[in-house]
Image 1 (cartoon, rainbow, N blue to C red):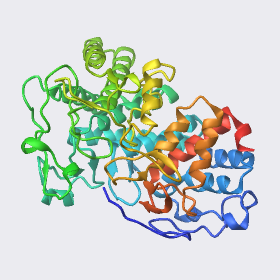
Image 2 (image 1 turned 90 degrees about the horizontal axis):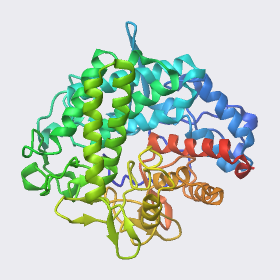
Image 3 (image 1 turned 90 degrees about the vertical axis):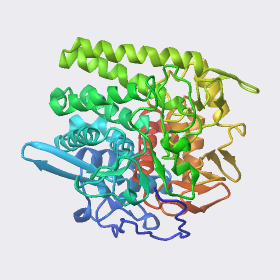
Image 4 (image 1 turned 45 degrees about the horizontal axis):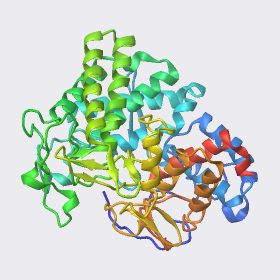
Length: 475
């Protein structure tokens, strides 16, 4: 993914977005200073009547002009700029780019449409679009379960094929093995089914893809050696490649699943990434539910439960560690030998985001202790200056990711903390009206990625949550 593409501007920016000229979205909701930066109606990639209705409802309740403007820009950004929806006969197919990178990540694409899922039953077109993404993701997993990102055209060779030493297939954009990529595909299918009741997504293709997911999880427990996946890249950035000739750092088989890379697409320092292993447990239990109650394959449901229980037991044994200042908390990574790495990264899954992903109860004392650690200067990637938040090595020191502030709000039970998060986000968008990948802790006008749809839509999800749970905060 792109690094430190700094844009220092306070005016309208491009990167795929065009100014709407105030001609489309309820101009009475926006003052002249805060004209909508959404694309004009005819230039939007996808439009949902249910989403447009929510925009108008929420915007009317936001008393702050700037926050209202940001919500109107950000909440529909995935639909406005990144969705490519088609019908192949009677089968919907949806490809969702990240924004300024014209490829589809399993993680990002799920996260980008997730905030719209609660509205699926109110809009048949939206429902069909999300169903199309479930179909596309299943096809991607079947192409290569170890790939994290894909090209729209399955015959295209990625630019990384020239620099990456791995089994790079046409149609894959990047082949960094990340547990969470497969978990997100399960999360979307399960979430769609739970919301809509539409079980038609669990067709033969989807079943093949999920059986491959479980097979891949087992391979990466590495009980029989390194397994089929290795990865090296010709690069100057060590986070973009792996140690031991592509096998990754040394590990001791213990029941946990190796994740060669993090959700940031940076390589892991220690092979067992704890947030992603928690995510895998949640995903396996979701698969067990689907196979037991819809597919009616109890044998495979039992296989999913057994693997989930094995990983869960290993997490209890290897992933609860005593910190010098915070007592028992979750480390970010371990290796099975007893070594652990205490940190958190802004990308999701993170330790902070566990309740958001339904991996831990927000009131779990272990989560609450870990939460205090990750939002403190004991976390090496917590940065505090004029503003504060969590970053990560992907863009380097002193750069806060708005995603971390949004996750703090989404996992908070304190209205005042939610309001603080909104205030921080409002103060750090650098007059663009959109979220970014990251910004400097002392100067938000130094930021990376002007078009990052995941964070834009996630910001909209936070505002919508506040609207539903604490509307008084928006007055």
